[in-house]
Image (cartoon, rainbow, N blue to C red; front, side, top):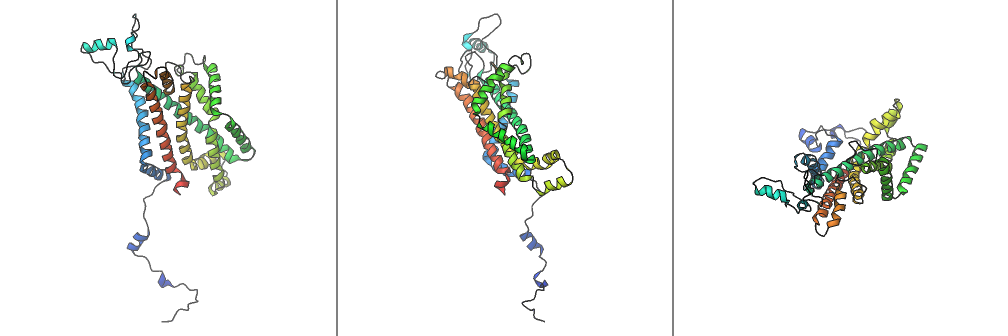
Amino acid sequence: MKKKNPFSMQVDLDQFIPATAEEKEYMVKMRPPSTFFKDGVKRLLKNKVATVSFFIIVFITIACLIIPMVWPYEYDEQLGQQLFKPVDPSYNNLKPFEYGATELERIENGEKVFPHIFGTDSAGRDYFIRVVYGTRISLTVGFFASIIVLVIGMTIGSLAGYLGGKVDLVIMRIVDIIYSLPDMLMVILLATVFKLVFGDALKGTFLEAIGGNIISLFIVFALLYWVSMARLIRGQILSLREQEYVLSAKATGAGSRWIIMKHLVPNCISVIIISTALQIPSAIFTESYLSFIGLGVNAPMPSLGSLASDALNGVMSYPYRLVIPAIVISLIVLSLNLFGDGLRDAFDPKINS
């Protein structure tokens, strides 16, 4: 057999023996087909804290929708007030699981009376159902405000990042100006002005129960709170617009709107979801703060902030009225923050790369 020259450039075919089935199974790690979203959900479910927080949010949301349908008391019903009779003061400031004078008589006669789990407030209204309605208002404001911020921020950020040039320069200068404004002061001033503007316009409409303050709060979010979302999406678009698939779409004649909606925004979806989830607790806290200082929903419609504010008058005698809405606000905000952190850990490609 001829000995091979050690300095020869010819390939030795004996070194390329086909692998056996066992060697292939050992060397190749087979994996079922998946998507980015499915992988993110799997990572999210492995995070027990985020999963528990998500189920807490879902439970609170479902409870706020279902409980008012079956609860025997209304949020604005004064239990001691009867037709053609003076107001019964025994219903005012009831402690948990206490009853008014008329209810005690009905119990003595063998009737069943539904208890007041959290007692009543100073006007004789069931406090539990008011907390439920207050939680519903806070969650509604949080979700709708985050949607407003998402739509405006995503639109402006996408345009600034993709178009660049003078458009980007003008938008970023507007963002810098809004960033320089004191948030809470501007929110209070705008809410006060819009309250006067929308006060009479909402009379006779379905928005009258909520009041002009909440409408003004949505407008404030639309004017001020989109800047963080816009800046974040702009940064993502700037890093994606020079990718090969974008250049290929341009070469085939695709328009700017098509490229943004079909290529750039879908590739930013993880950042968008995370930012939106973290925006909800911020909106809830802002609404609770404004309601606490009297710029929230109109009475008698309750909010968690307004309930805490009303409880200050009798905090020494009835401290649980302040503690209950404070615990609910803390639980909602904490759960949303933990869930948002879990989303970031699960869907952020930079963390999982």
